[in-house]
Amino acid sequence: MPKSISISKIDGKPGKVYYPLSLDEVPKQTPKDGEVVVKIHAAALNHRDLFIRQHLYPGTAFGVPLLADGCGTVVEIGSGVDSSWKGKRVVINPGEGWKDSLEGPEDKGGYKILGGTKTIPNGTLQEYMVVKQQELEEAPEHLSSVEAAAIPLTGLTAWRAVMVKCGSHNIGPGKNVLITGIGGGVALMALEFARAAGANVYVTSGSEDKIKKAKELGAKGGINYKEEGWDKKLLAMLTTEKKQFDAAVDGAGGDIVEKSSRLLKNGGIVATYGMTLGPKAPFLMQAVLKNIEIKGSTMGSRKEFTDMINFIKKTKAKPVVSNVAHGFDLDAINGLFEEMKNGSQFGKLCVEVSSAQSKL
View 1: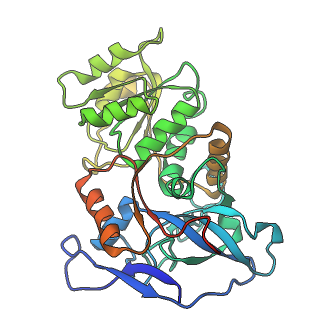
View 2: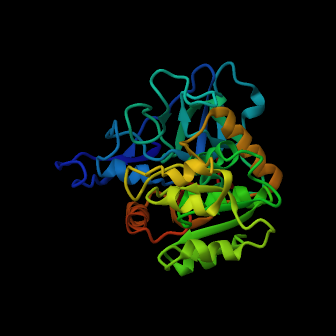
View 3: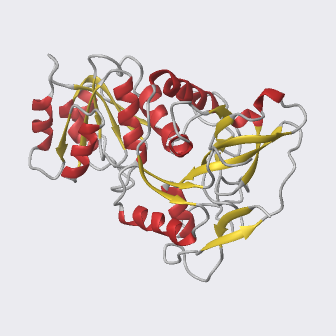
């Protein structure tokens, strides 16, 4: 029988408990009208998967396959699906309920993400996955299955923050873009998108090693935010005539608005996709006087997922993969979760479920 990996229930309070992984055998499913069966080649972890194991995520479910990111090959199609999809290597849209609105999910129930919850009892950490054909995009040919699986959730989040919220007038040749907290999956995808669009990208981190790696990936420069006066030092690095940033993409919060009032041009944009330093980021009068805008950004629509994949195909952009576990090795997959807990990864943590060259 096909295998999948979920979590098992044990006693414990939210934030204190750590649900163990469970290797399950599940019946092989038959696709219904409009559905296909995807043989999963690779899947990838996100921080929400760690939160699910700690019961810190809404709708935590037991027995539901984990993970939202996946790449595989269509091996069976249901009625109403064009036969051309069979045999295609695909990436899976990580959520449902958001078609194309710029404002946010149209579905009254909000945006629902795959993996480990009861909102959509389906996930990518399994051998075979039944999914609606309309949630698939053909995988970029220049990427391996592991690389393609590393894209969906963090890529979509970064795409909306960089390309939609910051706006094309702030992303492109001659534009200066700041990406804070480089090393995480979203920040690295933000770096790749902005770089591929032609912008001059600069980064911050508390790790000199991560700054060095970011430069190797195309960042023009970087600064350790633990240094005294790091913002002034960062501005001094700019090589363009205008010594200011056009936009900043941030996942930490904290004093980003205070710093951006000095770093950004008049009318500059701060696209914020998270607040790891705390749930508040004060909006100061200095920012008001410079007409700076701070825009919240989370995930993205089905249309934006298509736009992102097409951009990746056109520019040959690539995600950064930090480590890969192979097969349904619970010890190895637990090791990936430990890396995420410790924050030691640089890029995505992936599971190679099966080779794309293996017998379908």
